[in-house]
Image (cartoon, rainbow, N blue to C red; front, side, top):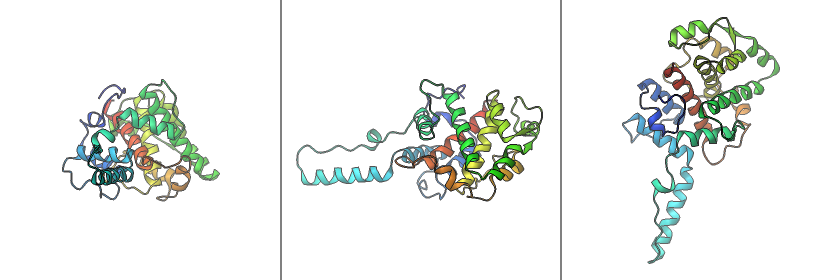
Length: 254
Protein backbone atom coordinates (compact mmCIF):
# COMPACT_ATOMS: atom_id res chain seq x y z
CA UNK A 1 0.00 0.00 0.00
CA UNK A 2 1.06 3.60 -0.43
CA UNK A 3 0.42 5.26 2.94
CA UNK A 4 -2.90 6.71 1.87
CA UNK A 5 -1.81 9.00 -0.96
CA UNK A 6 -3.23 7.38 -4.08
CA UNK A 7 -1.74 9.13 -7.10
CA UNK A 8 -2.18 5.69 -8.59
CA UNK A 9 -4.23 3.68 -11.01
CA UNK A 10 -6.89 1.40 -9.58
CA UNK A 11 -4.84 -1.60 -10.70
CA UNK A 12 -2.00 -0.51 -8.41
CA UNK A 13 -4.29 -0.04 -5.42
CA UNK A 14 -5.85 -3.50 -5.64
CA UNK A 15 -2.69 -5.40 -6.60
CA UNK A 16 -2.29 -7.04 -3.15
CA UNK A 17 -5.97 -7.61 -2.45
CA UNK A 18 -7.30 -11.05 -1.57
CA UNK A 19 -9.62 -12.91 -3.95
CA UNK A 20 -12.50 -12.32 -1.55
CA UNK A 21 -11.98 -8.56 -1.54
CA UNK A 22 -11.73 -8.49 -5.33
CA UNK A 23 -14.96 -10.47 -5.67
CA UNK A 24 -16.80 -8.10 -3.32
CA UNK A 25 -15.66 -5.08 -5.33
CA UNK A 26 -16.79 -6.73 -8.57
CA UNK A 27 -20.19 -7.42 -7.00
CA UNK A 28 -20.60 -3.76 -6.08
CA UNK A 29 -19.65 -2.56 -9.56
CA UNK A 30 -21.56 -5.28 -11.45
CA UNK A 31 -24.40 -6.61 -9.25
CA UNK A 32 -25.93 -8.71 -12.04
CA UNK A 33 -22.57 -10.11 -13.21
CA UNK A 34 -23.44 -9.23 -16.80
CA UNK A 35 -20.67 -6.92 -17.95
CA UNK A 36 -17.45 -8.84 -17.32
CA UNK A 37 -18.03 -12.44 -18.38
CA UNK A 38 -15.34 -12.09 -21.05
CA UNK A 39 -12.61 -11.51 -18.47
CA UNK A 40 -10.93 -14.32 -16.55
CA UNK A 41 -8.80 -12.06 -14.38
CA UNK A 42 -10.62 -10.29 -11.52
CA UNK A 43 -8.37 -7.24 -11.64
CA UNK A 44 -9.05 -6.78 -15.35
CA UNK A 45 -12.76 -7.02 -14.62
CA UNK A 46 -12.48 -4.27 -12.00
CA UNK A 47 -10.53 -1.95 -14.30
CA UNK A 48 -13.12 -2.50 -17.06
CA UNK A 49 -16.01 -1.83 -14.69
CA UNK A 50 -14.53 1.35 -13.25
CA UNK A 51 -13.75 2.61 -16.75
CA UNK A 52 -17.25 2.15 -18.09
CA UNK A 53 -19.00 3.18 -14.90
CA UNK A 54 -17.09 6.46 -15.07
CA UNK A 55 -17.55 6.94 -18.82
CA UNK A 56 -21.04 6.44 -20.18
CA UNK A 57 -21.16 3.24 -22.24
CA UNK A 58 -24.15 4.60 -24.14
CA UNK A 59 -22.35 7.84 -24.97
CA UNK A 60 -19.32 5.89 -26.17
CA UNK A 61 -21.45 3.68 -28.42
CA UNK A 62 -23.21 6.71 -29.92
CA UNK A 63 -19.88 8.39 -30.63
CA UNK A 64 -18.60 5.22 -32.26
CA UNK A 65 -21.67 4.95 -34.50
CA UNK A 66 -21.40 8.61 -35.51
CA UNK A 67 -17.76 8.07 -36.39
CA UNK A 68 -18.66 5.01 -38.49
CA UNK A 69 -21.44 6.94 -40.25
CA UNK A 70 -19.23 9.85 -41.29
CA UNK A 71 -16.44 7.56 -42.37
CA UNK A 72 -18.86 5.63 -44.59
CA UNK A 73 -20.12 8.71 -46.41
CA UNK A 74 -16.80 10.53 -46.73
CA UNK A 75 -13.65 9.47 -48.49
CA UNK A 76 -11.59 12.22 -46.92
CA UNK A 77 -10.93 13.42 -43.38
CA UNK A 78 -11.85 10.15 -41.75
CA UNK A 79 -12.66 10.42 -38.06
CA UNK A 80 -10.28 8.39 -35.94
CA UNK A 81 -12.05 6.87 -32.95
CA UNK A 82 -9.96 5.32 -30.20
CA UNK A 83 -11.67 4.14 -27.01
CA UNK A 84 -8.43 4.10 -25.04
CA UNK A 85 -7.75 7.73 -25.96
CA UNK A 86 -11.30 9.05 -25.75
CA UNK A 87 -12.32 7.02 -22.68
CA UNK A 88 -9.23 6.31 -20.54
CA UNK A 89 -9.52 4.41 -17.28
CA UNK A 90 -9.92 7.01 -14.50
CA UNK A 91 -7.34 7.20 -11.74
CA UNK A 92 -8.32 6.72 -8.12
CA UNK A 93 -7.93 10.46 -7.53
CA UNK A 94 -10.30 11.28 -10.39
CA UNK A 95 -12.90 8.89 -9.02
CA UNK A 96 -12.54 10.13 -5.45
CA UNK A 97 -12.62 13.80 -6.44
CA UNK A 98 -15.69 13.20 -8.60
CA UNK A 99 -17.49 11.31 -5.83
CA UNK A 100 -16.70 14.03 -3.31
CA UNK A 101 -17.99 16.72 -5.67
CA UNK A 102 -21.19 14.75 -6.26
CA UNK A 103 -21.80 14.44 -2.51
CA UNK A 104 -20.73 17.99 -1.61
CA UNK A 105 -17.77 16.68 0.38
CA UNK A 106 -14.99 18.05 -1.82
CA UNK A 107 -12.47 20.60 -0.56
CA UNK A 108 -9.79 21.82 -2.95
CA UNK A 109 -6.11 21.17 -2.10
CA UNK A 110 -7.05 18.46 0.39
CA UNK A 111 -5.06 15.24 0.80
CA UNK A 112 -6.46 12.00 -0.55
CA UNK A 113 -6.68 10.54 2.94
CA UNK A 114 -8.71 13.46 4.22
CA UNK A 115 -11.02 13.40 1.20
CA UNK A 116 -11.68 9.72 1.90
CA UNK A 117 -12.67 10.64 5.43
CA UNK A 118 -14.88 13.51 4.23
CA UNK A 119 -16.66 11.18 1.80
CA UNK A 120 -17.34 8.51 4.42
CA UNK A 121 -18.49 11.07 6.99
CA UNK A 122 -20.80 12.77 4.50
CA UNK A 123 -22.40 9.52 3.37
CA UNK A 124 -23.01 8.31 6.91
CA UNK A 125 -24.61 11.61 7.93
CA UNK A 126 -26.75 11.69 4.78
CA UNK A 127 -27.90 8.13 5.47
CA UNK A 128 -28.87 9.03 9.02
CA UNK A 129 -30.65 12.15 7.81
CA UNK A 130 -32.74 9.92 5.54
CA UNK A 131 -34.09 7.98 8.53
CA UNK A 132 -37.22 8.88 10.41
CA UNK A 133 -36.52 10.55 13.79
CA UNK A 134 -37.16 7.39 15.80
CA UNK A 135 -34.80 5.20 13.77
CA UNK A 136 -32.18 7.94 13.70
CA UNK A 137 -32.31 8.28 17.50
CA UNK A 138 -31.92 4.51 17.93
CA UNK A 139 -29.02 4.45 15.49
CA UNK A 140 -27.17 7.25 17.22
CA UNK A 141 -27.55 5.58 20.61
CA UNK A 142 -26.97 1.92 19.73
CA UNK A 143 -23.53 0.81 20.92
CA UNK A 144 -21.14 -2.06 20.15
CA UNK A 145 -17.76 -3.21 21.43
CA UNK A 146 -15.00 -2.20 18.98
CA UNK A 147 -12.37 -4.17 20.91
CA UNK A 148 -13.84 -7.44 19.65
CA UNK A 149 -13.84 -6.13 16.09
CA UNK A 150 -10.23 -5.04 16.48
CA UNK A 151 -9.25 -8.55 17.56
CA UNK A 152 -11.13 -10.23 14.72
CA UNK A 153 -9.79 -7.94 12.01
CA UNK A 154 -6.31 -7.68 13.59
CA UNK A 155 -6.42 -3.92 13.14
CA UNK A 156 -4.66 -1.90 15.78
CA UNK A 157 -6.13 1.38 16.94
CA UNK A 158 -7.99 3.24 19.62
CA UNK A 159 -10.76 0.93 20.70
CA UNK A 160 -11.50 1.28 24.41
CA UNK A 161 -15.09 1.37 25.59
CA UNK A 162 -18.40 1.00 23.72
CA UNK A 163 -19.01 2.99 20.57
CA UNK A 164 -22.12 4.28 18.82
CA UNK A 165 -22.45 4.85 15.09
CA UNK A 166 -21.71 8.52 15.67
CA UNK A 167 -18.73 7.51 17.81
CA UNK A 168 -17.17 5.74 14.84
CA UNK A 169 -16.95 9.11 13.08
CA UNK A 170 -15.09 10.64 16.01
CA UNK A 171 -12.75 7.66 16.11
CA UNK A 172 -12.20 7.84 12.36
CA UNK A 173 -10.32 11.09 12.85
CA UNK A 174 -7.93 9.44 15.29
CA UNK A 175 -6.90 6.10 13.81
CA UNK A 176 -6.90 3.73 10.87
CA UNK A 177 -9.18 1.46 12.88
CA UNK A 178 -11.67 4.31 13.13
CA UNK A 179 -11.84 4.92 9.38
CA UNK A 180 -12.27 1.16 8.91
CA UNK A 181 -15.26 1.19 11.27
CA UNK A 182 -16.75 4.29 9.67
CA UNK A 183 -16.24 3.06 6.10
CA UNK A 184 -17.55 -0.42 6.85
CA UNK A 185 -20.63 0.92 8.60
CA UNK A 186 -21.26 3.32 5.72
CA UNK A 187 -20.80 0.45 3.27
CA UNK A 188 -23.60 -1.33 5.11
CA UNK A 189 -25.86 1.64 4.43
CA UNK A 190 -24.85 1.84 0.79
CA UNK A 191 -25.04 -1.81 -0.23
CA UNK A 192 -28.39 -2.31 1.44
CA UNK A 193 -29.69 0.92 -0.05
CA UNK A 194 -29.16 -0.57 -3.51
CA UNK A 195 -30.06 -4.13 -2.53
CA UNK A 196 -26.60 -5.73 -2.83
CA UNK A 197 -25.55 -8.73 -0.76
CA UNK A 198 -21.80 -9.18 -1.03
CA UNK A 199 -20.48 -12.73 -1.59
CA UNK A 200 -17.95 -12.54 1.25
CA UNK A 201 -18.46 -11.11 4.75
CA UNK A 202 -17.03 -7.64 5.24
CA UNK A 203 -18.78 -6.69 8.45
CA UNK A 204 -16.58 -8.77 10.75
CA UNK A 205 -17.69 -8.12 14.31
CA UNK A 206 -20.24 -5.57 13.14
CA UNK A 207 -22.94 -7.93 11.88
CA UNK A 208 -25.55 -7.34 14.58
CA UNK A 209 -24.92 -3.60 14.71
CA UNK A 210 -25.03 -3.23 10.93
CA UNK A 211 -28.26 -5.24 10.79
CA UNK A 212 -29.81 -3.03 13.46
CA UNK A 213 -28.81 0.19 11.77
CA UNK A 214 -29.69 -0.56 8.17
CA UNK A 215 -32.93 -2.47 8.65
CA UNK A 216 -34.71 -4.16 5.70
CA UNK A 217 -32.89 -4.36 2.38
CA UNK A 218 -33.50 -1.33 0.20
CA UNK A 219 -35.46 0.74 2.71
CA UNK A 220 -32.88 3.52 2.64
CA UNK A 221 -32.49 3.59 -1.13
CA UNK A 222 -34.73 6.46 -2.16
CA UNK A 223 -33.57 8.77 0.58
CA UNK A 224 -29.83 8.32 0.38
CA UNK A 225 -29.64 8.67 -3.40
CA UNK A 226 -31.84 11.75 -3.53
CA UNK A 227 -28.95 13.90 -2.36
CA UNK A 228 -27.29 14.08 -5.76
CA UNK A 229 -28.22 13.83 -9.42
CA UNK A 230 -27.22 10.51 -10.96
CA UNK A 231 -26.22 11.62 -14.43
CA UNK A 232 -23.18 10.90 -16.54
CA UNK A 233 -20.98 8.56 -14.55
CA UNK A 234 -22.73 5.76 -12.65
CA UNK A 235 -22.09 7.16 -9.19
CA UNK A 236 -24.59 4.74 -7.69
CA UNK A 237 -22.00 2.04 -8.39
CA UNK A 238 -18.80 4.06 -8.12
CA UNK A 239 -19.44 5.62 -4.71
CA UNK A 240 -20.08 2.34 -2.81
CA UNK A 241 -17.06 0.86 -4.62
CA UNK A 242 -14.88 3.72 -3.37
CA UNK A 243 -16.17 3.26 0.17
CA UNK A 244 -15.26 -0.41 -0.09
CA UNK A 245 -11.74 0.49 -1.27
CA UNK A 246 -11.38 2.83 1.71
CA UNK A 247 -12.54 0.07 4.07
CA UNK A 248 -10.25 -2.60 2.63
CA UNK A 249 -7.18 -0.38 2.46
CA UNK A 250 -7.74 0.78 6.04
CA UNK A 251 -7.69 -2.90 7.05
CA UNK A 252 -4.55 -3.66 5.04
CA UNK A 253 -2.64 -0.61 6.24
CA UNK A 254 -2.93 -1.44 9.95
